Length: 368
Image (tube, rainbow, N blue to C red; front, top):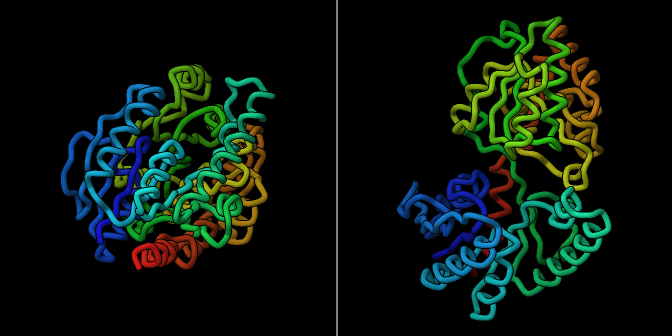
């Protein structure tokens, strides 16, 4: 049964799209195609990638790249189409009009994302978020199925046509990398992911700067800076001298870096799109056996306190962040036990095989 994933925004080898969903479908026997921005087309691990040029800007992505995605989608003649971007909803509706089954994969709460756009005036954000909310939910009614990345996202859509497929770690991500025993590791702190202001970049560097004078702590930082402005601001902080920036790492490089660290940081600011999110890095740190220092949001508090895998702090308070890190460094046995509890929670519950079952059941219904 031929199925086709469509994205104009995400790279071809996106972890959720390629590593999890596409490869799970390949293993289940589907003929899987992926239309996505990539350097070249080809067959990769059983997935047939149909490459389209990466858009130069938002305008070309909205009006040129989507047309290219539409043309490739028609050519493939799949039984089921799986759209991963809001801007592809019109394509999904056109495919439905042609009698195709169409899944809309909602990665984040789009209205809350609009509320986070600081370059828009406050009243404009509120009005635009309302319009986006109504438009997305109305358009989704014309599609076959909604796949939501979190329970909070799923609640925005009809329960009878929604399925939750959470972005939990793969078994390969749960394999511990050989490294130094936890108690003998130096005081290294890890952060992996997009580096910007609202994900706590400034507070992380400030906290490590405060701690480094007492504990010789260093921050291992991996990922892409969101803009040259935030990169310049972070590099200008006094605490930057205690940062080891490793750039964008492949998955094996991320695993190796986490095997060096004593704890992981998830310090998102309390913004609308963060409070109900479930960031991948939280579960990746847990899978690596690291205790976490995380923002005190109700959802995160439920996960961290229920599993006993770390400490919660005010993400806007560098002193509180430094104090939490100091406690974990000064209590290595307790910190290691927290990491072990987090890893066990991932092994039992927060893992991709548990979510894969829901995805495959969804496809079985679509293809029946």
